[in-house]
Structures are given as structure tokens and as C-alpha cells.
Length: 287
Image 1 (tube, one colour):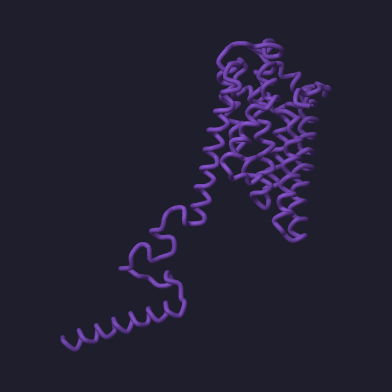
Image 2 (cartoon, rainbow, N blue to C red):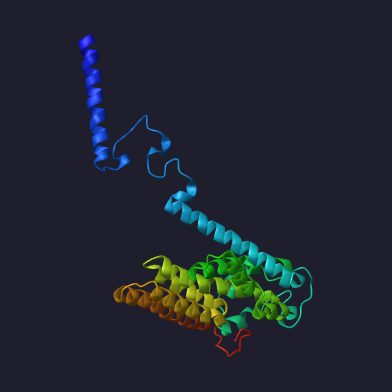
């Protein structure tokens, strides 16, 4: 029994020396299993959550999203709460208080109004429209800040404030309150198209669908997609990426815009043909 015990102790010491030697040679600490090792002996285990690069990036995105929501709600309510909590309708909003002329919207190429109104309802409720508008605008603000890589809290607040108090939104709430939430959804989809194209290699396909849907809500925000693509491309050139990679990204951006616009024209042709209507001309408020 003594010899057996001594043999086990010798074998244990030999294994400990071997493991210590492997670690001294530069082997990673987590390449072996240590049942009795403390929790923080492995990389990122037991360390603060922010120290892990992936988890830290998630927390940064969550903080950024929270800040965008808060700033958009604060500025949005400060500027437009009167319209959202009072029945002070005018212009087309007064005409469309209880019903919406879907045929004219299809003729204008805004075919997405039809399924959206089926979900939201045709009655113009300022509080509901205002709530949905600020929710969509909060997401659009977050995507814009994320795409432009704005991290400074003050600059994030200014960006959200400019978007929430823009004169276009003010005039929309004054005259077209019944469609304000749809316009903000069009803005969100326009920003989402750029984000999808940048997030995934084949995201330009989903981005093209979002471009089509954005145009189907309100065509004026197609310019937002183009402007964001241009600013993102300029930012990528300052990152110092090689020409081949830059060319591939620009091709995906162009594919998103061209394919999305082609889808939109195809759907407009299909909807006008099926309904027996014709496309009309209209000067948008945001133009």
C-alpha cells in the first residue's frame, strides 16, 4: 500500500510538472482542463462583462439604442406633443379622419398603405399615430447613428434632436397627421436598407426589399437611402480598405438601390393593373 501511494504521488507530481512546463512554453491556459482552477484562470471567465469584446460590443449597442430612444422621445414630445394629444386636425388629416382613399394612394405608387391600414385601422387617432411615429423614428435614429458611427453622447443627442424636430415632421403633423406614422416607417425602412447591406454579405437582397417597401410607403425618403450610402462609402475610404474590397461594397450598394427600385416599379405595375387604376403625379411635402 505504501509503494502504491508513493507511486500515485510521484505520478501526480510528474503530471503537474508537465502541465506547468507546457504553460511556461507559451501554451494557452485553457488548452488543458483544470478542475480545481479558479474561475478567472481562463480568458474572460470571471472578468467584467465589458472586457469580453463581443459582449462589450453588445452592451455598447444597447446603450446607444437606449440613448437614441430616450433622446428621440424627449425631443419628439417637446416638439409635437400638442398634435399628438389634441384633436387639432387640418387639411388632408381632417378629410381622412374616418376613412382613407386607398385607390388614390395606389395610384400614387404608395401601395404599402393598403396592408398597413388594414393592421392599424382607418380612424385617425392622434395619440396612436404619434406613438407609432416616435417608435419608428427612434429605430431610424439608432440606425442612422450606427451607420455614421457616432459614439459621442452629445452628438447622438443632437442627431436625434435634429431628426425629431425637423421641419418636415412638423409640417407633416400639421397637415398629414393621419399618414405621419407611415412616413416615419418609410424613413425607418430607408435606413434599414443601408444597414442590412452593410451588416451581411448578402444583405443587399433584403436591403432591396426594404427599399421597395420604403418607396411603397413614401417615395421622398428614397433620397435618405442614397445619402446614407454615399456617407458610408466616404467613411469606408477613410478606413483605408483596399480597392478590391471597396469596389465589392460599392457594387452591393448599387445592387440594393437598383434592384430595390426595380422591384418597386414591378409592384406598382402589378397593383395598378390589378386594380384597373393608373399612376398619377403628385408633389410630395418633403420634396
